[in-house]
Amino acid sequence: MDDDELDERAERLVGHLSESGQAFTLVPARARRIDEHIARLLGEAPKELAELDKNTEPRPMTQHDASLTAVTAVLGGTLSLDEIGSLRRGMNPSAAAHPFASLVETTQQDVPESADQVMADEGTFTFLPDGDARDYLRGLADTAPVEDLRVCWRTAQ
Image 1 (cartoon, helix red, strand yellow):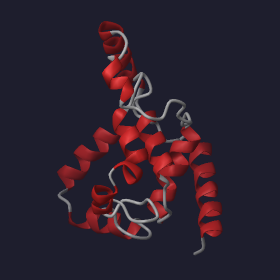
Image 2 (cartoon, helix red, strand yellow; image 1 turned 30 degrees about the vertical axis):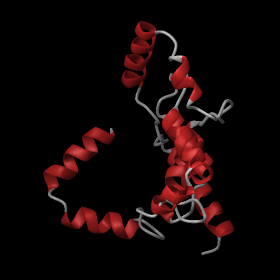
Image 3 (spheres, helix red, strand yellow; image 1 turned 45 degrees about the vertical axis):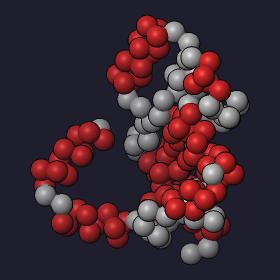
Image 4 (cartoon, rainbow, N blue to C red; image 1 turned 180 degrees about the vertical axis):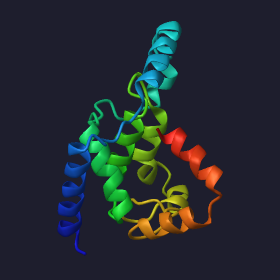
């Protein structure tokens, strides 16, 4: 399957997910409220922390973007470092600075000798399975204890 076919397939699947009310939620509302409360108590991020985030104008990630990113990753598409950084930022949108997302976005240029250990030349992670991850997920579902799967499902919800 070429990249255009994969992109079209991912868009169709995300459309079906959205229509059925299964859009990807970056962070549940309860977790967002807790984050917002913590942010109010702590105030602004320390200047030193903000300086570690090199992306001063990150692209916001919508539910559609997050769903498309998840589907693309499962179907074997590649995600750019910017997309991975946006996903990480979307999981903690109330943070004034996000050094970990920035690290993902800039690792290849900042520390290429270390980046090569976890990132391929095209910017994908080397520790993720290649290609369509559904076979890997089916294998996991077949071999993992049912109680572990139940705990994971509850956690994901």
